[in-house]
Each structure stands twice: as C-alpha cells, then as structure tokens.
Image (cartoon, rainbow, N blue to C red; front, side, top):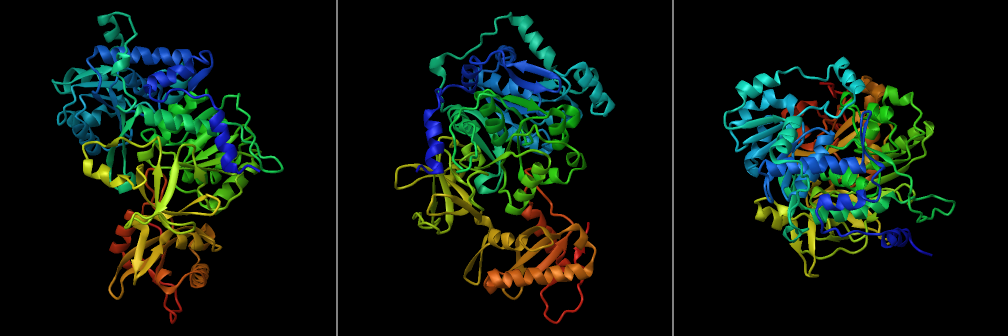
Length: 616
C-alpha cells in the first residue's frame, strides 16, 4: 500500500508543468492564456479577468520602461494589498527590473534605510503616506515617486464605503506636488504616470527584454526578513526559485479527499477557489504562496476592500472567500470574534496556515469552531522560511499525525544535522533542520558573509539552507519542530528546548498562552521563567492563580529534570506579538529584566501570591 508521501508525490509527478526558468511575468502569462475569461483578481466589487490582468500589467510595464527603468534597476514598492501592487511586481519582472517589496506599515526611518541600502531611484507608495515621507525623500537617491490611492480601481459604491468609514486621508496632493516635494524628485499620481508615459511614447505596450537577456537565476525581487539569522536581511529571490515553489505548492490545490480509509485521491481540482490572504503582502508567504501560486492554478485572488483593512474576519465574512491563508494567531482571534460567532461559514472549504507552528490545542479549538459553523475544512499547514520562498514542508488535517509539521514538498529534501560537526542525525535525534530546495534564495544583498553562513555546501555536494530551527524526523519520515537554536539554552550542562516546556505547560487546565524565557540569575548564571496568560476567569482571582501555579509546578516536575523546570512564573494579561502574530520573546525578556519584581518564585514556604498579575 502506498504511503501518504508516495501518493502525494504521484499527484505532483502527474501534473503538467511549465518552464520555471522564465520570468514571473511569462510564467503568469502562460497560465493566464489557459483561462483568459476567468476571474483572476477581485478588489471589492471590481474584478479583473486573466486577460484584463495581463493587459494592466502590460500597461504598467510600458510606463516603467519608458520612464527609464531597465534591466537590473531596483524599484521599491511600499503598497497595501491593492491591484497596483500586483500590476507593479509583474510589470517590473517583464522588463527585467527588481522589485524591492517593503511592508506598507514600515516606519519612515526603516523605509529610509531600505531605500538607501537598495539605492532605489523609484518609489511606488501609497499617497496617504506622502506627508510623512517628504523629509525621507531628501535623504535618499529617489528621483521619482509614483503615488497610488487605495481607492483606485474601486467601484463607486466601495468608494462611498471608504468615505463613510473615514478611510480616506484628506491631503492636498496638488499642494505637495507643487511645493513640498524636493526639487530633484518627480512625483506622479499613478494614473497620471501611466497616461503620461503612454501619451509621450505612443501606445505600443509590447515592452519586453530580449529573451536571450533573461535568466531564471537573475534576481527579480527583494524581500526583507529576519529569517535564519534573526536580524533583518535583504533576501534576493530569482524568478526560477519563485516559479518552482509556486508550481510545487500548486499541487496542494488538488482535491484531497478524506474517505473512510483516509486515502488521498488524486482528482484534479477543476473548480477555482476564491482565495483571501491575511498574510503581510511584503513576505514570500504572501506573494509566492497566496498570489503567484494561486494565479498559476487558476484561482481568484481576493484582495481586502480598503474599508476592511486590518479586519481579517470582516474581510472573510464580506467576501465569502472559499479558501484563506493566514497566521495561526489570526485564526485563534477568529474564534473569539463576535461577528464570526454569528456567521455560517459553509462557504469556507480550505484553510492554509503559515508563519508559526499551529499549537495543537488552538488548532483543535479552531477546527471545532468551524465545524459548529457548518464548515468541515481541510487545514493545510506549511513550514518554511523566507530564504526558501516560504514553503518546504506541509501537513494536512487528513494525515492523522499529532504534533508534526509534516513531510517535505516534492523536490525538497530535509535533514537534521549536528550544527557543530555537520554530521547527520539519526531517526528521533534532535538537531538543526536543513533544507535543500529549488526555492533557495540567491543570497543576501551585499552580504556574502551572511549568505555563506546560511547557505552551505555539504559533503554530499548539495547546497543546504541552515534554518536555525531545531527538529527531528521519525521513522516514517514525518518532521517535527522542536524550537529555534536561539531558544535552545544550556543550563548546568543540560540542553533545554524551550518549546518542549511550553507544550507541557500549555496542556495545564487554565493556561491560555505561555512562553518560556531565560534570564540572568545571580546563583546559577541563567534561569528559566514561565510567562503565562491564564484563562480570563483565572486572571483576577488570586486563589485560582495560586492553584494554577501549583498545577504548572506539578506538571513540570513530572515531565522534566530540575534544570528544565521554570524557576519562576509570571502571569500576564497578554503576550506581546510581532507583525507575524508570533510571540515577541525579545520584548518580553527586556520587560522582565526591567521588572524582576513581577515574577512569582516557587517558594515552598510561601502562603500568599505576590503581585503576579501584570495588566499593563
């Protein structure tokens, strides 16, 4: 009998495949020509067929080419999830330029540094940010700014919605263009930019770089991510790596059916999904998996209506998308939403999760919540990092294996190594997760040292990405995530894996969230501290908190040797999160070092619970 691995890989092997060494634009166009009348993109009440999408991209490419952008030039794109974002990325690919994608909420100082580092001469940005950017522009090499309104491409009804919900920022663009923009910077509204370039140079939109000048290994996009090294890096991605991952990821859109024998049936999915992303659009997770891959399998990419920005649940309910992609924290919040509690989710067929590992308890509660709302969804979890175009391993709810992050995607190889000796670990042994993938980045921009630390050629002759994550592989080939190297601590000669302790404490009744941190300790050098968010009905009841503390202590005593038990506990009303919805460990450590008195020590003689609830 075939294993789940073999059946899934058979589906991929039998798929029709395109040449991944083409440009992003050509790869999209090849797939678009197969379905020119089908809807590719929705934005509020406005929709674009695949033919119209290509037409808009062609016009945009023409305008950029005639404005002087050529092969290898870097254009910084700092936009919300609106059609112009998609038009721009594919247009730059068509003419061989590089798109540097920056988070639309990036601070002005961080945006300035990225503009200076990339040496971008053109910035495409939401026009509502112009007030804040005037001072920044004068300190960069930017010579042209293209300003885009969120309401562009919206229907009249949607524009009225924006006004009613006060989403339109009132600024005088004419005043800025006339007086405030630095004299050495040319500023255009998007429509004016497109029209001016077209009127000045004619109407021939067939702007291409000669085919022999294209290489699938050329850099096409910059992504900014902390990734494997934990500090912000500029990741250089090629069209070949992005196309390869999009094509591989596309096989997850086959119709996996869970029958009585839990076997996978390789029926091709013919009905297009309407696909909504709750991911940050400046990441490979969003562009590669939630946009490029969706276009390549014929799905409809649904963008948030601007008046729903920041409200994933509102966008999902409003658009009734059949598939969604978001972070685990977003789905957890969904179960607590009053509007979601009143909604019938029978339209929702598939859920894709990425960014952090979906905790087992939270996952169960989320799936049960959807079942109660008439949605028996297929949950697909992905593991990957930006340096690998965001997807290396996948797991579905039909695999029936607890706590695993899954199996490698086709053409991806995963192994576990000893980081010091580079020797490969055996089954069940923990070590650093390394991946060999066609989605491998080209490297970090102008950082050869950083590139060589993360991408290394092993004795087998292959290049491997060192993820910085700890994991192990079982005898059936399922991969498990055991934490990050930076969260593997040595205490008195014992290696402590923080995730193991968090998973154990999370099973204690009354614990909502938990994170384990290490802090300096005068006696032992380092100590473990459990930061716990209790359930709401525990939070302000000192007797219940005392009982919860004791339950956590007992659980840790049963599960771990002394060096692996938390020395202290602090209860909090919430845990700070980063932009990806993951717990911000660094912020918590800084706060706890500055506020040591908020900790509760395991004192066998103590009878009172001291000041443990921090609600600030």
